[in-house]
Length: 358
Image: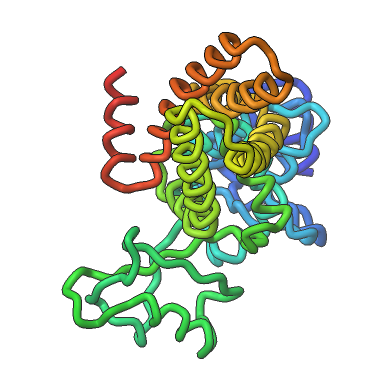
């Protein structure tokens, strides 16, 4: 009867009475489905964000139901998605989620909606992300030492918070016990396929590149994910920069000699052609973020001009025209070369300061 009365109040949009029922009966549930008051108010389309706020204030149970879904699952997958109710939950996630028992178990089932949450791209997502990373301790791991990496960070992938002997050995190989810096362990609560080239990681990277809310990138969760991407892919970025540097040296020597040397032309053209294909791939894959990045525009133009210069030379076009292409290719090419400095810690920080200043 109480549930029927509550639903009638919701349909009638009688906000004060609905809030009164929530306040008096925060543990109201529907058996055997495992629907709690939070679920009921999230499932009803004729609803109000005030009901969600009242649930939070009354400490209603934010549990998993029998299908392993939270109220947030239903709100995000509703045909008539109510952004205000979703934001209400996300905005209070720092106080709402820690109140629930078995919080790590609940977070494991957020993997099915994690990408949907990220795509909301607002300050409330940033609040939610603050709850996605937590500290933990392993007795076998020293409290002080030194991380054996330039970034002072190491990553391992494990299924449970109590790693097996092999996984513990993977952690220990990052640590030099002779150091005196504090060692802390953090874990990302939402399980994804963290294999570097999995569909989850590709999708996550695409979403992160499209986000515009700065508060999201200030969270430990976002920093952890970005550091993880960089740790697994820095070899490619550095190899690409090395390939471009070799190409730029060859082209500079070729332009300085002012004479045709076919082997140099062919080698440089092959290198530039490979890098240009990579740029086209990035352009098609991350079009929106690619167009917003000035350095990407310079990268594309530098490689395109170099290709046009060689085509002009091989077509026996007017020498003045070829010279112009070579001059512009050199000019823009050196600007692109500067972008390679972002791969080093000291110069990447300087680049960040320039970005923030302007």
